[in-house]
Image (cartoon, rainbow over all chains, first blue to last red; front, side, top):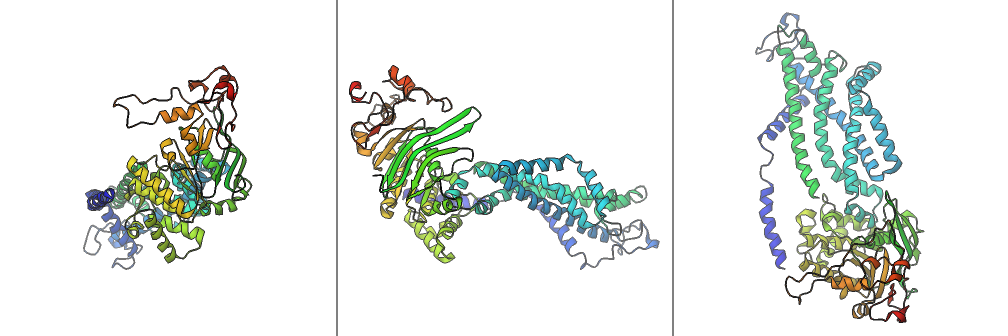
Length: 290
Length: 331
């Protein structure tokens, strides 16, 4: 019974310590920026903003004013409104493309890591084939063929992110599937489906989610590159990448038209990377101790 | 004895293909366990104890080849369909593993792991499963079981975790419990508690138990029969009192001599078994213990002794020169 009391005391000490700040300021600033961008993007239609597509040829490249907080672009469209509506596209593509990768790649990776054998060779082999294509060229070719739309863009970028997620999921499944608790579950008569969903998935999900945030950052940049090249979303709709592309033409007169969307993208991608890295660091040592 | 045996392992051979050649992990092992009985399987690391238990459970690595017969409760486990086998596991056959650190899922609460096992096998509703989990945790000596249900494995101590693992194993009232080195990862004071707990629950539920260990001290007072394994084979098998009274196999003697004793003077070197076990991918022609055996003669290197019952039906050993019997008499 002596051991018992000791344990209770130990818990009492460790409990409050776990709630302490261990993420640091930068993490919370990043979270704050992301929340702000998401909120603004989600409520873009409700906010009292001018239309992002209404042109005013008399007010081209207008400076900052009470009417246009961030001025207007080369066609006299409200810059702030375009930035916010651009955030919607960047975030939509940036979030949903990795979701496609997470779901498909995660499922394939777990199945490959758990069942091994021929299925694993097939999955790994086909992913290697997909990775062998230069991603940007593939994206260019497919958008040129399927046509430009946000949906197509999301689909292509999602497909391109499948191999990376597959590898992360397979790697952690491989190590986890050899742990005793999986054998213990088998010894308790668990089905394969149960082992995959209840025993392995909660363990694999942590590294996958950390990787997901890093994936979002990469996809936002890729979407920006495609839009900059004019193969992203179709023209009247704004996206950060296409705004930088349009701003390029007037870099000498109004450099802010390229720098404002670039700054927004920079801050957002940096925030995703910071949050992703912090979460990854959080899951890594625990993985070792399991 | 074979008629009322709950589990009988007949001529089981486990072969593992390795890059260095075929590894015979278990070599023609025969064992029986009656209902309510306890069998101890003793041997050093790598002698095939764990592979034997995995063979009984049919949980061998995919590449392993298994032959022989494993009769459990009147059914040959090797012939059962995967679905029937799955239903049998957990329900009638349960295991407690060596390291409770790894045998519990780190990201699920104790409650989830217990309750799901109960619901899977016993068709209980949520409330009944929770009630039963609390009972089980209390039965294995865990204080404040209601609160434990919401805790994660890392919040419990090693001994507590092993108690939880035992509770999960016992949850469906199995007929046979296989304890694979249940106390190896725990410290000594907890070891006795866990072994006593296993013995108590075994008596109460009248289940059969196989304790696999490298520690003769663990099996001494708690088993009905002991099988000593070396290099994949059973080299001596006897009822526990007979084994400790007059062991015949030099390996058993060496194992017992290697146990530390309280009455020796401090700083006395522990008698160890010199040498190392033979490479299992290169089987020896003769007795596999002969290179390390101090009684070994020329014959031991060329001929493999069979496991025979020389003096009584229960006491079997595989040795040409058993301890305490003149060589001529046994040969």
